[in-house]
Amino acid sequence: MKTDPVLHFFCGKMASGKTTLSKKLASDHSAILISEDIWLSKLYPIEISTFDDYLKYSSRLKPVVSQHVQDILAQGISVVLDFPGNVPSQRQWFRSIFEAARVNHVLHHIVASDSLCKAQLHKRNAEQPEGSMIMSEEEFDHITAYFQPPTDDEDFNVTRYEFS
Image 1 (cartoon, rainbow, N blue to C red):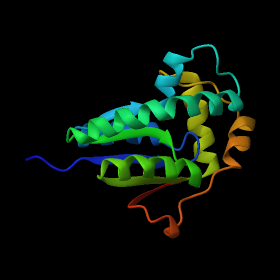
Image 2: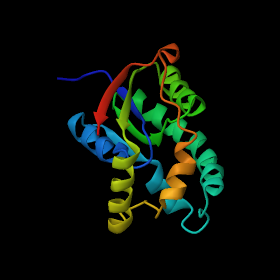
Image 3: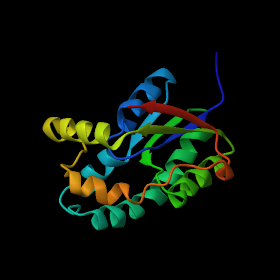
Image 4: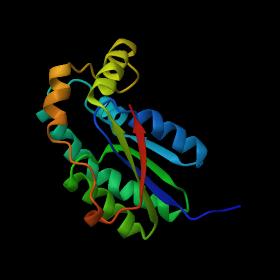
């Protein structure tokens, strides 16, 4: 049975499990998975070494991805965007996509403790899955300081996951 396309996207601290969940959702919903980490690692394999580099190259990628995702959604195919939506401006980017495509959306908000995220960060650093960069606990703390969970005022369809 055919269902209407949905844009799935994420909010959660670094190493909270967003990528793991994105893969599961893509499989469960027969959706196209687009991973920012993988695209950035393929397009800019040596250019990204700092958080500022990431911000620069991520901002270059988003306009291309926006139109691509809208085109996929227009074909009736759901999309899972494994990009962070950890501050309101990032979440507004997702809004611009699903509103332009006139499709439903789900913001998957992962709530996880810093200690769990750091344990998963160490595991990810050891395993080095495709697209991942080795990150220190200090970098985790620096980046997490910017994290802002979604608020009711943002008016997203939120599914919340709590991990301790």
